[in-house]
Length: 425
Ligand SMILES: Cc1ncc(COP(=O)(O)O)c(C=O)c1O
Image (cartoon, rainbow, N blue to C red; front, side, top):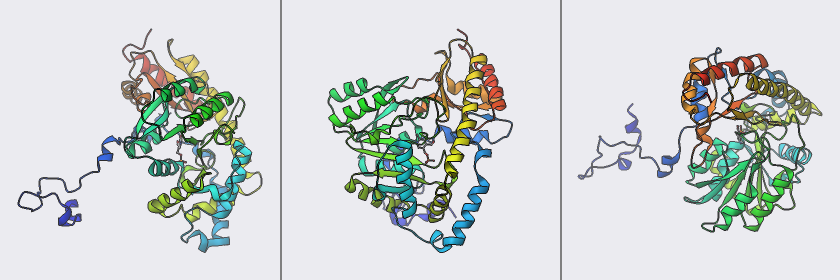
């Protein structure tokens, strides 16, 4: 059947005589789709499927560390204990025992006090980003973001036609002085300030405790709510933990997002959003109802069954941190050994990414072609920037390959750089 036939004739573009014009497309896209590009990462992931390719592209957990047997046992226990509940529709807000566990978890890991009626279980924190954007952003509204920033958040905000403004960062993340400077210039009051304070994607950098307070104070002074996205806070391999921005007394209005994707299994799609403002929470619930009614009842119960066993998740996270810490060190050592002079990179205390800057003439989108020819991939930095792209930057993931493959991949990448015009100082 031709796709065009799916549309009722009344919705078809018409000619002057009122009949549908077969030369015109039947599906006419909403204006908001104009700003929505395919994710650079998802496109690259398509070429990384061959086992010979070493991928530093996605933010994927190590496949061999996903606790498949334990998850399988939790799935069986869930079906045996409450099969009907697990396979039935459920409340939009989420499975009550899981929401209670989220409160314990964020108190222990982020110093955040929350009650279950402030917790909304979402299908990944990507859905949390979408819901917050859907509820708050009108076309043309300003959203302040890190620069560079997490691509999935940029996509979510762009889908609602936000005007994105990147606030410059230094080694400690977003600069509070530059945030204040921007807000003092007047103009339209931003709707939202988006932050990833722990091991940010793509740079791996973290906001110091002091910087968190400064940013929270500026945001409160100018009446800008914060959207804090924290998928990596539990993956720490060094340095001192700082409390969540949402937990600071300086913070006025904040929505906090957490997820099991990086600490358990992204395929389960279980995450949470914490909104203290009851009116906002209620709107977020309504928005979710319109999207998917509720997050998978089965996944929620399965995760609940896994995480509420004493010490099991903590033990798993400790194993992840031990393995990822070695992989991070392997990547930093390999970069030191193989990358040519003139390159710089971050040294993150946690998370999944290193961010590198090459000598300015190197365009990392061109470098990617050379790299793929040599069997290695990464994400060119251009897509993460808001405004002017810095095209000699790239993101490297270190969680998804063994230490040996990381060393091999970085030396292949160094060869690709050497083959790029302008790479030598
Ligand atoms: C900063 C950030 N936020 C949100 C997400 C989405 O995570 P989830 O799998 O929970 O949707 C990611 C995934 O990489 C991320 O890096």
